[in-house]
Amino acid sequence: MGVEGEWTLARETRSITPSHQRPRELILPGASPHVRLPRSALMGHAGGMETDAVTVREARPSDAFSVGALHIQDEREQGHAVPPGFLDALSDAWLRDRARRTWVAEDPRGRPLGVLHGTRVQKLPSAHRPADAWFHVSLLFVTEDARGCGIGQRLIEALLAWAGTDGVTRVQLNSVPEARTLYARMGFGPPSERLMELRLSDRARR
Image 1: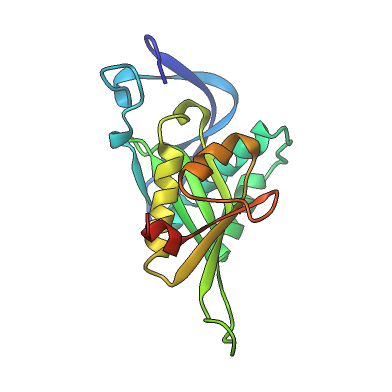
Image 2 (image 1 turned 60 degrees about the vertical axis):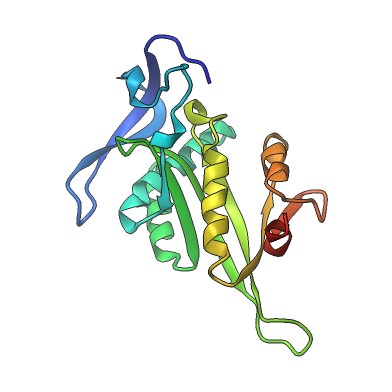
């Protein structure tokens, strides 16, 4: 992704204070004064994003507002109006959902760049099949300024690394047309018109 000179992002800011963390500024999408970011923050020598500087990790409870902010950005890009109080409601719901696993990508300053999350589903014991588990991805989102730099792939790879250690035998998701190339490149296939899944055993044989 080429960028010349300094670049700006229009953002709405919200001050948050997690119970065990000092106040920090969270960047949210919206119409507000432009925030000028130094080109050196994430840019490599060729002008593209330096993805090695991006951290991908499992989310912690203190990431609740960051996860909510990325959801809001996704909702707005789809043309949905976000009602007042939505950030708090979504963040609270995310914290209560103990079955959900989430990974986040962030720049060296801690600015959220992407999120992947979904739910692990454990099959009940059966006399005719193994009681394995599968994982459904409910959201993979990368901010517009960070797209095309491999962050989505790194988020998926983090999920697959975890899945291989937790008894998950397949991962499935609903794909939008724009993302099918990424998923296909990583081994996902279409068992139906919309559903795509990756069997980890197939990936291991590659």
